[in-house]
Amino acid sequence: MSVHNCKECQLKCAAAKYLNEDEYNVLEEHSVSVPFKKGEIIFKQDALSLNVAYLKSGLAKIHVHGPSHEKIIKIVKAPSYLGIPTMIGDKINQFSATALEDTTVCFIDTNLFVNFIHTNGKFAYELILELSRNELSDYQRYVSISQKQIPGMVAETLLCLSCKIYESCNFSLPISRSEIGDLIGTSRESVSRVLTDFSNEKIIEINLNEVKILNMERLKQINEKG
Image 1 (cartoon, rainbow, N blue to C red):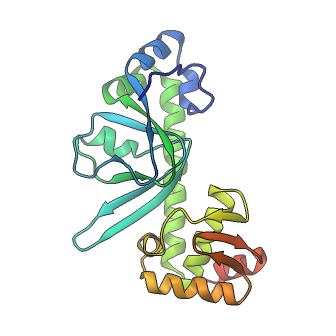
Image 2: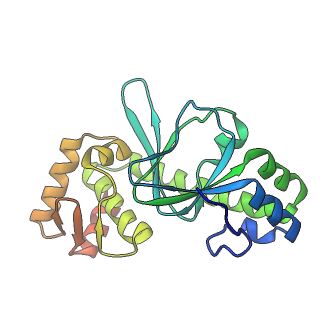
Image 3: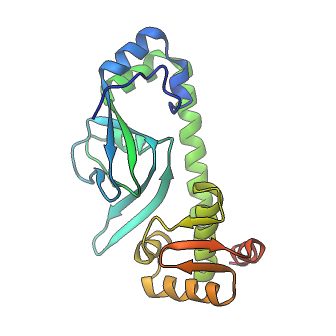
């Protein structure tokens, strides 16, 4: 872990841009930047939460352990906060976050973060905007997934990875087929079968975890039709 220059950081959130010189100095004294390797747990469900986690670089999954199996809630791309509602609203983490690639996370003292919300209106407003955008995006994804068949859900996942996460038609799957099943609510076998069908139809080319989208328009049609 390492201390860092928050004011000069090029990856700070929009809200942090409204902190003044004194607030930046206090932030640097009460935050730390920690690197995580792929697969390492950033924070764990049911553990005590003392910090707000800000994903500065990399990729992470938010996941919850239920009565019978794990449910992946979403994949988060940096820069972004990881679960402000549970970290501020509860002292116990309500979910886990795990790095999907080499990742850097800034941990900020929760009490300091809350103080910024109370004393800096512009900081609080930008934070509310980010939370609102994320919540609306989550609602849209939940509705979309709930109204699709498995091919449509897999197509939507591939499009999300291509267009929003990696911004490329060529990428490595950051999660396993079993985890894709956890994300969209189906089995590993169903995901593998759909990926094989997409490959046979020349919609994608897939080699182990390496994916190349060959027919973006066809993939979008499957996503839209569900």
